[in-house]
Length: 129
Image (cartoon, rainbow, N blue to C red; front, side, top):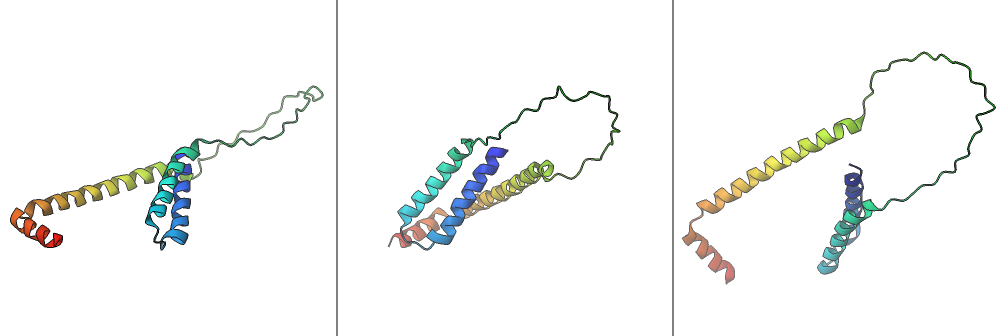
């Protein structure tokens, strides 16, 4: 899940940069190359781990007295956590867009099957001229 979050963030950053600075540029080859580099970096960069070092100072526990301490344990109800529901929301989105894709593909297939080949050749011939 962490990989998907990092990759999505990298793709979002590259896309935002493209929309703000490069969308109206007419160098299509360089735009395409920029977006491909963005996708390649989104695949590779989440694997890089930047270690954060925290100094640890050991504490000598020999000088402390060990006395039995009774602490009452309170049971608390589980609080709302967004990450518990994020995967469910993600799956619902995947299902909705998969159904939408299937409907569009079926519509395209039906449209191409209903076209007569004679009419298609005339249209294609006028398109080439």
